Length: 458
Ligand code: NDP
View 1 (tube, rainbow, N blue to C red):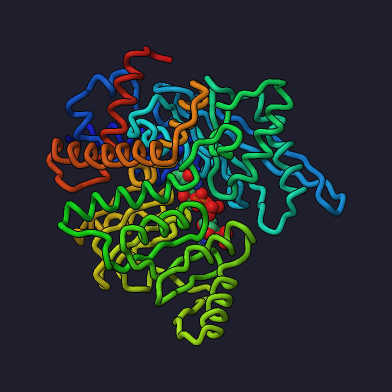
View 2 (tube, helix red, strand yellow; view 1 turned 30 degrees about the horizontal axis):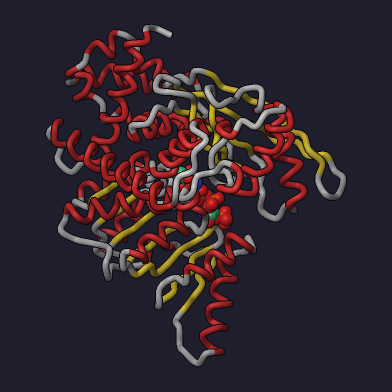
């Protein structure tokens, strides 16, 4: 055991020494490799074949300049990234993130997680991730379009239906995918529907892709609750974020009878004692792209007008994890839930935490939840519904077919339940019942490792 730990420690040390300025990537590698010892004890051939060293090194990193002209006529220059991490199981697959915090280390952490997540879905998908430090907030549609066209002009050289299939992530939704797809189509003079996922269902997208990550996270959490003899019905739920994942996690949790009391954005959080008004939330965030404070103002105004006394409050700059909740679904961004937040949630009686975002819990938070016996579903398992339906979108594009919402949702549910059961079965097999983190990491890893071994040293 300790010999294997030494091997793993040496791999982590090399990752840190090679790229010292990538703390999020180090964190993701440490978290995964920290759980792999028992699998490697059983399969020393993976170590002998250098699988670990290859797993932490992307197959290809593409970094490019993205020049564009803003509405005032000024030239702006952003940086574009695509990390093609691992293609053992299929074409590189993973989203594009447009956010000012984006750098190579963040894209590498997301790509590394994506490899194992995609493996867990059971679909033939490799792992990759990309994006830019471009901030779409406050930009006009015309600016977003010019930026997206410039970004795709370079990216188009490196992607393709059988090569690399990007999708959305933070800051990249239906509007951005539309501009990116349009430019790809123009440059290639071919209608390659399968080159991007997250498209509008009117021109090649899959129904239920918009909902998939949020729905999938709640389906996964429902299975976790079932294991404790509980359900969403009547339970208080806190959901961080107010974007794509958070909105559809809210929708699904409410459909299952939950009381979703609060959501957040990067400026603060809103508590709605009557439960979040989903239609208003969608109007404010999806249609108007406004701040969450607008939700609170509108909700208060409409309840005053109707004479009802809805208790809604907006807490600027507040910490959403201070609220007592039975179930917490972090759906905003990495490292948004700290060890101190975890301790507050535990003190307040949280029972289940499922990550809709990627790596939202810090290592200290994760350890605290596990030590307290809280069921903890890591992002690479709990939020895999998005990429799973992206895989289903690729299947529909390849067969020129179009499935109904119900068909896709049924497949999504099957996939999420299967991932849940795989995590638990793997945790059992390795003598750590209920440890979803170990189960997800080992199950995701072993399939990739077996395949890399079969493909030889490449
Ligand atoms: P969106 O851009 O739609 O929404 C992101 C939300 O998180 C916004 O409310 C945003 O607030 C908030 N947020 C972003 N960055 C920060 C920050 N630094 N601090 C506080 N709040 C922040 O993105 P998605 O909903 O698509 O993605 C959310 C998470 O889910 C990400 O971790 C993503 O990687 C993960 N994910 C997404 C998938 C998908 O299919 N979309 C699939 C799997 C995982 P504000 O507007 O104020 O910035």
